[in-house]
Length: 291
Image (cartoon, rainbow, N blue to C red; front, side, top):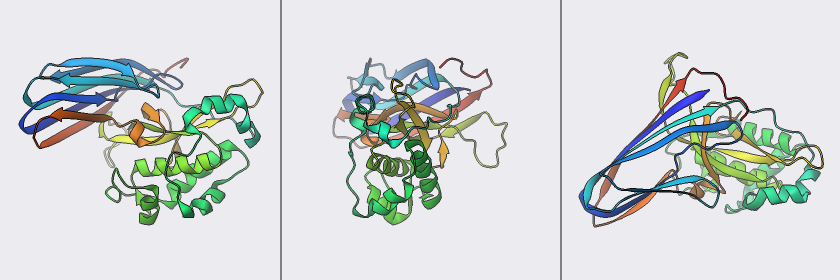
């Protein structure tokens, strides 16, 4: 499947500002089941663009408008091809202790989120006979046990807040999944991107939809065989499903704060407002081959 993604935002300031710097993580990742085919950033007023890879290998575009302005308009266009993943590899927990596995796991193995005293029951409940089975159990349990509830939490909420509320947003589901997987020594990373779904009642033939940033997780699963490298496998605990061809990955990190879609700063004593929209359009073309 191929998607055209268009992001548009407008920042308005009640007084002139200068030195407006924004970091955008919006280029679709390439690798595995996904390939980025086109990416373009435009801004008004004119400014400077600088592109680099962050510590986790994500593509970052810095947008700098040095002169005085009260409106900043950003447009991003991207084209990406995706395909469905192959089934996750089945290998025993003993393979998590291999040197190759731990080297690939890097910073995604240790716990980087606050410990939750009453998490033990969930940790024991999701434990299965293999890392792949445990990953499936985490995905199913979170999708069935907790409710997607916009407004129940905010960007600063903790996993404890999420559990106490019994629901939250995709960021909360992803953070809890990370904690459960890492408690079983399964390396896992936070994924930021988009999930293409059409509005309820609009029909399957609708090819375009407005979406919001979505979050899911990738778990590092060992592969049978002493010389086979482990592979990252993605699941969407918010929806209780495997992350498939309708998921477009932008980047990954240890947690949300490693991969915010937009972060920025400016000089000036001004209040600001922002209006943003992301539209995904499904293009009917042959599936990605040889990704």
